[in-house]
Length: 394
Image (cartoon, rainbow, N blue to C red; front, side, top):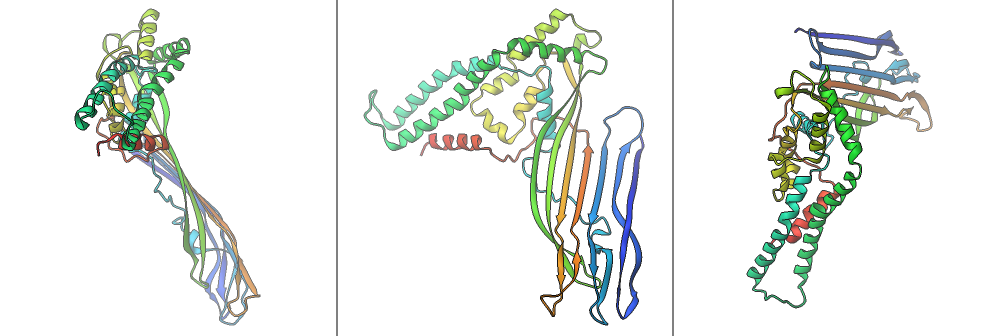
């Protein structure tokens, strides 16, 4: 399948400038760009091939200046050189919290898998079952390390600090998830009905197609650059603001014995109930009850990968396509030009400029349990890390 590239430029009047003692030394009336757009894609059968669409729009940036001497320069609606070549206004990057394509694909597969649990009942039951044993073991270890009798007096400050951390962790990892799941179970009928509709789409003509938003972020930066150096030396102080949105499109199709035909409504409902409640014990379940597995998931995609490969509903991931939309807006405020020999004399004005660049891309990717993450810890994650630090041995 051959690649294809298309582009176009948007012209506008560029104005003119010259030296008073040399009218031919500058430029005559010019035409410059108001931006451009381009599209790179692939022609041929199928869809969801690689795609890159870029556009840049430029407004303003005119310079008007009178001549006040034989060797002075004069500008008439001249678009400054810095924004005449489409080189200014690029993306600034540096936005934190945007995962790699593989990591984003793994998260999207976990969130769109028709076998994903809405409430993971087995994991909660197994986790509750291990909690009393874990508490007893921790208590015995504490007694053995410190030689404590069965009945102790007032706890020390360090023991209070450690106990507070343990209580916070119990709330975050045992009490809070269970209470949340109980609330979710109150909507069980709606959950199952939604999952039935999703499974029916899976066995439709096109399979199950879903697009989910994985990450969004933005940042601003002050950028200084030279607006014009020929005829006059002036600059812009631009405020560049960038926003990025990462979405992933996934495609699932049936596999196994049901790949060629639609199952009965009874089977579909049974699958919907089992998948919504997570009624299976598989690698994903065992990973959820592994101590501190959530901490590993902060830095790797292991948990998401195991969830993405759960197969209560017979389905296989046929394609995963990360899509990024980046918008960067440069705002360059205008200002008057003051004569260097007289601070009260205005010789001209540099008009404000606005440059907006948009880039949309689509790529093909895959899922992996080993995608590394460099997380920006949220307030809740920071509190969990602090609680773990409080309970560690000193």
